[in-house]
Amino acid sequence: QVQLVESGGGLVQPGGSLRLSCAASGIVFKNHIMGWYRQAPGKQRELVARIMSGGNTNYADSVSGRFTISRDNAKNTVALQMNSLNPEDTAVYYCVILTMNKWGQGIQVTVSS
Image 1 (cartoon, rainbow, N blue to C red):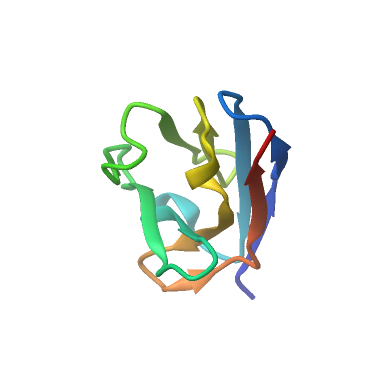
Image 2: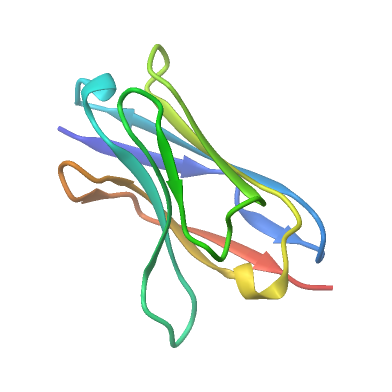
C-alpha cells in the first residue's frame, strides 16, 4: 500500500532553519508530482511547494526565496528546506502525492522565541 512518512519538524527560533523529509513507498515515485501543504490554526490549507517528476518546482508567494523543495527519485524521498523561518510559518506540514491526492500524517513546525 502507499505510505508517506514525514520527519524533521520541531521548534525553531525566528530566523532559523528546518529541513522536512518525506519517504514514500508503494508507488513508482519518479512518475508522481510531489508537494508540501501546510495548515495553520484557523487558516485554510496552503500548497507551499510542489515538484514535478522532472524536477520543475513551484512555490507559494509566502515562501518563495526562503523554502526549497527537492526530490531524490532513487531514494523515493522529497524534502523541504525551510530558511529564514518566521512565526507565520508555524503550521502542520503535510507531504502529499499530488497526482494521487495521498497525504502523509502531518508534522508540526513551530517558529517561536
